[in-house]
Amino acid sequence: MAAAFRLVKLSPFSSVTTSLRRFLSTTAVSETDARVKTPLYPHASTHPRADSEGRNVQWVFLGCPGVGKGTYASRLSALLAVPHIATGDLVREELSSGGLLSRQLAEIVNQGKLVSDEIIISLLSKRLEAGEAKGESGFILDGFPRTIRQAEILDEVTNIDLVVNLRLPENVLLEKCLGRRICSECGKNFNVASINVLGENGSPAISMAPLPPPPQCESKLITRSDDTEAIVKERLRVYTEKSQPLEEFYRVQGKLLEFDLPGGIPESWPKLLEALNLDDHDEKRSAAA
Image (cartoon, rainbow, N blue to C red):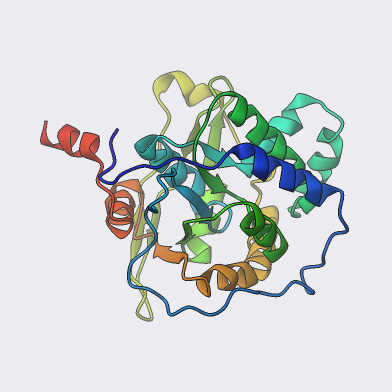
């Protein structure tokens, strides 16, 4: 796939990894003590794309659990030829590894709580080291940062170009999360929910068709252990409480793009590309054919 703007070169991952490791050995700063230090910039009508230094995009995706960060970040990752690094995937990989952290992580995840900064940064550092060894350049972060302190650490070591905040109403998010299914054999994600929410109080109607599995996966679908109504509601509550200061942190930097998803992938993907000033040539060729 090709994007309709020039991609540029990323500063070495090693500096990011070193600084993240340094954070693990420092005294944690509480979120209530953290303060936004960036001066208030007027909110620009255009969004950062690429700079004159020639480095690859460095983007962050925000959004409630189940909003579709992974879906859209992975599509943009393929389009822009940069790695999609999802901390949720890193946590799930660690859970399945049987390592020292797996039992502690299982307890945290099953209670719908947020994983600590120290654990997330440790997992991210390991992932960045692996990417550096493979010669990766640029990134789209999904699930990090989640707190102002994490955002400050990231700002100290690299320059984030753009922060995309995906949004959906809470009732739609709940239906999406409860409809998620995973194939126990191939590991791919599907969704059995058929969502049709009527517009009210000025809000547009939202329709999302199911994402059914192929025949070979139908009998192998499983539900994530943390996708129960009680746990999903708690995750949404915790995220909303924690995310507002982080959104404001990036808003005052003029880097926050708030994108209300108008529906499922067919409706939302073209609109997101338009908001990002991107063009998916391969998708246009497929549509024309």
